[in-house]
Length: 177
Image (cartoon, rainbow, N blue to C red; front, side, top):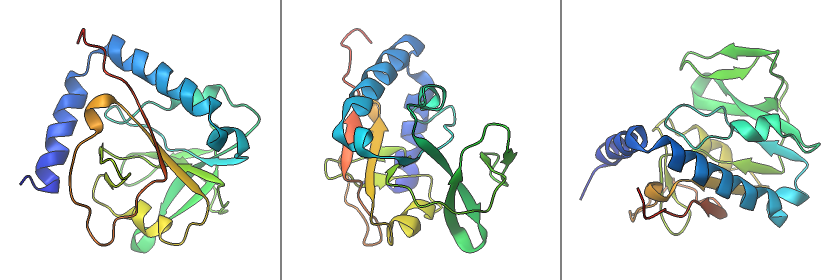
């Protein structure tokens, strides 16, 4: 059985080889389904993440804001995390090289789009290994979802501390790639 580290490495490699046009197609498909879902429509404060090159591309959600309050995570000491209001003019680079809000004013989201690398059928995920989201979600009472490309779904056994997302929005594979 593959370790989490081996699975992460494999998915990162697949992500790097994912054809650009197929990534664009699946991104548009998944984001359109997400934005039409009751989960998205009913949410007012939405926790997003600033995507890296190997994560699902949420960029369009930041530019197509449908009068929702967009929030992004900010890492704190002791591996804690908050969500703060997204303001493209008030971002700073974290120690991890990610863009974060300059503000320390925490805002509770209604819905969080949880990032990761791999998900199973039950919504459990393998992320980057810091545990920030699992710690945050352990006390979160709102809704959770994840958006992913077809190759990011796999079977694995979650660990005791893992917290599943409530809904997955998955791209469908185009047989041409």
